[in-house]
Image (tube, rainbow, N blue to C red; front, side, top):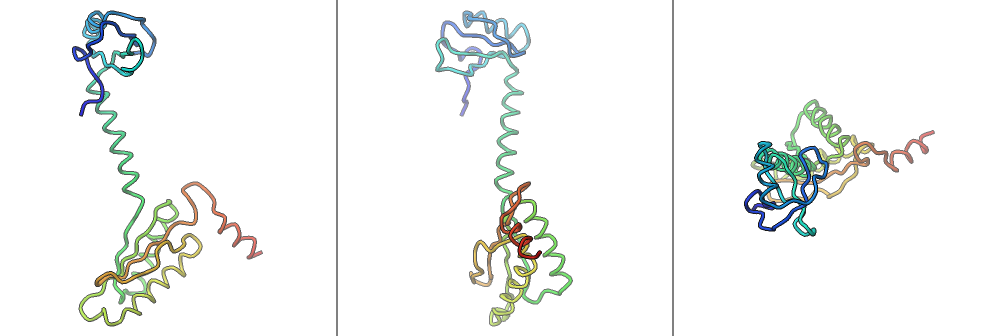
Length: 184
């Protein structure tokens, strides 16, 4: 879906023209404005169709569309990056657990939420308590930077829980400040 009318698709008799440098060039006949844009090797793009007369800007439309798509992709990437998932087994080695906790700490300090998935293979599902102990140990070691958002619950052969950061990226948390006062 094209959101802006370009060149010959602009069907109004007159437009207020803004040059490629951003300065106003005044009200012109649409045909003259299109010819002026072509003479500069650029396009005439209607940016405000509801104004009277409509506002059109002389710009490189291909570059404009590329920049817009890039911004949308970047915004989507930021949204998608909010939840990080860590998978582990209930029989995880203590050193491997330390490495996973270190990674979770990084995610949480960057302001991301962390989804913890303890997966059970075969008959390990009989010992759900082993996975809960691992989850509790993670929560205990990360209590200074995280709080439980979703309590761990069994979904099929996975124990899934979610941690949220106590601080937002670049901000300070109240809980951390209270711990410092209480520890003095």
